[in-house]
Image (cartoon, rainbow, N blue to C red):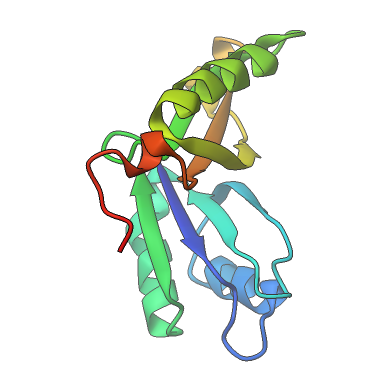
Length: 147
């Protein structure tokens, strides 16, 4: 679960049902999905199975969805926590992300809790994506410009 696709599910009008139907017809299995106000202009985040990433992109391209692909290995806004299924584990993950965000001038936008694959399940791990965005602070603007 190292990749997340973010999009506004709008193919006129915004419709999550149409989007999920198209992904299903394309054979795309989702490991996680989340969002807020998704049929009111909000953003939806999906995490396809690793084997289905290219198929997911092909479906989105074919139906003319605008989307962004984020990878935990190359985008510091997206963090993957492997959380033990026990009290306090999710809190520890979010606390680490929040501390890192303070330094970087970001805040958490959303959290996705995924379905463990066989390996993760055998280790008692639940995959969690935490997506953060910059806010207008000195830390976020360091080295940048206001213009």
